[in-house]
Length: 256
Image (cartoon, rainbow, N blue to C red; front, side):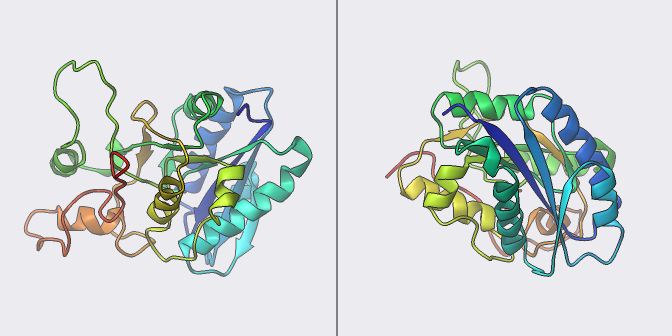
């Protein structure tokens, strides 16, 4: 598939402190794929702060929702993005990130490269933003996050098991075939990836373009990264499930 247009969708709930940095990084990434058209949609979900106005000022198309649910907000944002992208043709590529994250300059270019290699979806990785996390928290997080990565020069790229809504891409055709994001309060990203996997779509797992995400300890979605990071703090009780920054967000490394 050679995308005819790209749509970037960002769900946001009370993210006035971080949305501007997110959008600045997305504008740089969009410039790297010019002249392909890129529409950026922020789904401002049940916001009580200046998120929506800052997003509009930052060049995004803003859809205000009252879902109070990240899965439903992502789905609404994608519906809106596809309506805006309809004139660009059927081969639209959907890229997802989060409002507390910043993407690298080549982020969209890398996703397009995977799409041209006939992959239906791209699962990327994350790093904790250094200005939001101390070295001990980063070390504890990374010890679990990278435990499946081979040490040394194995000659093979790390096909990681993680799924993050902060770093995910999918063709609009594949997204629609599997029914899109479910209205889940958390884990909506893993649920979508699992359905893509189960229906035989080609999925690239890459660590080539990690997204920087906030290491805050009080997140917007229950059971997400913030909850895990809170459990990694010194003296915190063990998490209720096996610890990982993508806890509950794994995808099998090979088809059974």
